[in-house]
Length: 441
Image 1 (cartoon, rainbow, N blue to C red):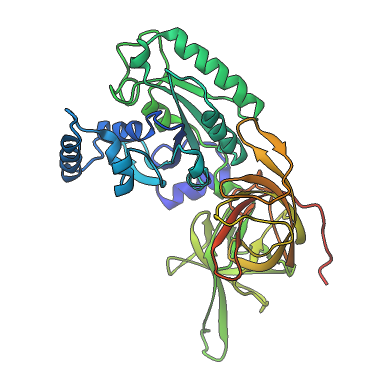
Image 2 (tube, rainbow, N blue to C red):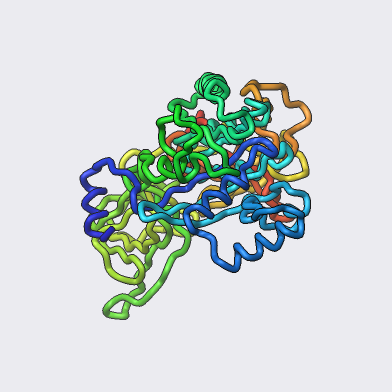
């Protein structure tokens, strides 16, 4: 798509599918539901596997005594994963069809690797949750469903896999789809698309299944190619986290021009726009934009830009440029966090909070609860959050931050908690609310 066409669509606000664009998706589910096989089938049937890769997979499969290629090995890339026959880390794969480009995150199924699933699904536009048709809905299925709801992944596909193992019975598929849809709706997920399939046999993954003529819906690939993604970042309110300030001589070389550079998290920015430098609250006008080293009249997310303002304001790394409606700066926030580190997160613990390009000291004032993700319930949390736990916290920061609710903006509504001693990432957080608004003094 040309930049002129893209800019025209941003200006008009027209809704359009991402056909020819990029779709981020994540696969998740319980152990042995066939996630890696499904991803391998998707790559293989879309001819996204190089010849030498296929030769290596066939050789590895022969060493394991298998008659045909084990397509799961296309994503179980770590040696430990291949030896154990499980997925441990998030495996990212890139592929494309004539209609769309894809970034796929194959996430682990084990309970102890739930944090990896959070990582893989945090930027996804669509989640594919697998269920083994023989076992139906299990606790880990609902755990991944709850995490998907928590991360507000816009689209959910229920892939009822291994239908060949149940004789392709329609009643089995219908019972699983009805149960999952009802339980997902209780978690706030509407519009689940359920697809019966066999990743091993290739039924309804890329090509329609002759064994399931009772199913008249789309194949998985067809749905992925045609699904409409919701609000695009370019149509959201302007958020430009400043990553770097560039200083260069002006035209007469008697003064220095200052450019604020960063990647647009959301929104559109044009020459002449009035912007506010947060959290200071000072305002100015955009007099010049640079995109890829060239002067531009406008830019939109997720482009990287350099901005020159009309006024000589104090703009540094960590500042946030906004326009129009924007939250007030706050020092106290409530959030939902997924704890990632083996060491527990405890009340009154001192941390660093990293929000976009800004990092400030903070204290975990309270851990209000731990989430039972299998049933989306809340449990008391007296001893802190352990690795893979998800819970609600209240945090006090040393400096004010401008935070969107995660429901409004996944990019500027998320943050990391970091250990100030060794720099390790402790938790990933999602802003729930902004209860207090301190003065700008």
